Amino acid sequence: MKKKKRTGEVRYAKYGYIFSLPFVIAFLIFQLYPILYTAFIGFTNMKGVIPPEVHVLDNPFENFQQVLSSSTFQTALKNTFFIWIINFIPQIALALLLTAWFTDRRWKIKGQGIYKVLIYMPNIITAATIAILFKAFFDYPTSPVNDILQNIGILKEAHNFLVSKGVAKGIVAFIQFWMWYGYTMLILISGVLGINPEIFDAAEVDGASRVQIFFKVTLPNIKTILLFTLVTSLIGGLNMFDIPKLFLLGGPDNATLTTSVYIYNQAFSGSYLYNRAAAASMIMFVIIMIFSSLLFLLLREKDADGYGADISKKIKKQQKRDRKLAKKGGLA
Amino acid sequence: MAKVVKEMSYADIPKKRRPKSHTGKKTLIHIVCIFLSILSILPFWVMIVNSTRSTPEIQQHALSLIPSTNLVKNFQILTGKSFNPLTGLMNSMIISVGVTLLTVYFSSLTAYALVAYEWKLKNAFFKFIVGVMMIPAQVTMIGFYQMIYKVGMTNHLSVLILPAIAAPATVFFMRQYLYPTLSMEIVQAARIDGAGEFRIFNTIVLPIMKPAIATQAIFCFVNSWNDLFKPLVLLTDSKKYTMPIMVSLLRGDIYKTEYGSIYMGLTLTVVPLIIVYLLLSKYIIAGVALGGVKS
Image (cartoon, rainbow over all chains, first blue to last red; front, side, top):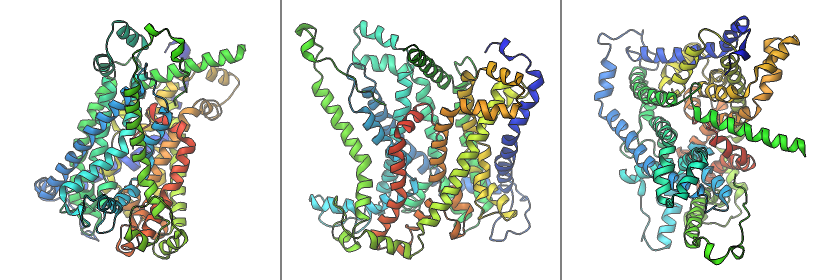
């Protein structure tokens, strides 16, 4: 931005602080303090319904060691990553395929608007509801899935799907996939629409095929957005709670236990092991901060005026278009 | 949203120049898209239909696409136990409206501070916001719960609302929107007219930010409405339960064989969302594309 525009700002500098103050105060009370307090609890003996006098343990890292060596936590961590991966690979693949179809300049698929609305819909529905709905769908002995499989003759009698660890994990991953591929698709489409159309013109003139254009032009140009999607999805996946918690309560035999469910169970499901839960939280916090700093670097990369150039650019473009339209309207 | 593009008719193009026909591929694309659309609708359709069927009907055939006549009875069974949709609706409404108002107002204010003024810590503050915007509620919950418990504020809806004043991801989005949009000339002109800084923000800047506020308000409301983790930890009094907690009760033993009423309860939470979604879908889809923030 031009310096000239911003003369006389020194006088007003204090308002920068004043207007940020509510945010800062709320952040300190409701986010920073809880994080520090969580970290502190991780080093203490705080457990039980009415915790005894809280003090730092003789071996301050005892809780952390216990969590890291606990086979339940290890299972939870493995499950979390496993479920995320088997949901993310088909999710990004399908989202890319739909993006390629919907943004194709020659095909101009009709009815896109309705497809997008329907495909995105599961994303805004309460995850808690969806978890219980899918539980009802696969229940034993009475459930829609059992009913249809018996009707078309695949099953002779009702089958209890939900006692199988593999099936349970698969369904949780499927629900995540089903809820999020529409979101990912919309993000990718907006990325492709942000590419300068001249690049596509040039490729078409050069006689590049659809597949060539997609892999050689489209994909390299949405690299940043793809990485952004990957990182945000991973962080979201690491916090997966509603679906695994309500679908099978982490079972069968911890097969769908995720780290968030583990933390919740340690603290709030009757065992009151706040210190253990806090240690597990901090371990997750460190893992998430590592991925988050990756995102931070990503957003800073190739950016003229700070961060997230993609969004700024898109907004600028939109405003230009609006202005043009307004002018036209004014002249008419 | 898709604009209906009027395609030139084939007859208009000389035969030699007609593009290669893609009818086969296009048909395949439509088949896949229709399949995916059905995949999005079907679970909810089965759910709504089953909420009108009696438990014996469901036990006989759990899958049906045709509604039955048991709607009212299912509702009575459902509400005869611990599921109280009105309480859930009220509490969820209070929390979500409160969270949305606080988030969009204070995020806009903070974004304005970051765009309109030159102050020493500005850049550091912005970097900090970007750095912390991905921290999820889950990892700070133990400390948060203990803090709230110590001051005796569990079961107060306000502890779920007030933290919304600090929403780093929304500030980030608002700042990205405001930066290219805000013209300092207008602000200067208002200053010359004698308007105070706070009034300028409320009467001039907020209206400028309307599109961004609308987008963020929708997502903020939906995220807050759907949140299970925080209310589940902080609200233990059944009079304070939110909709997602009500839903989680359907998982319990008291509804074990009441299939019809379980579907009824689920339907009650989904139908309002679907209606609102379909009404606002245009804005929501555009909002996601603009970088709607994931919770």
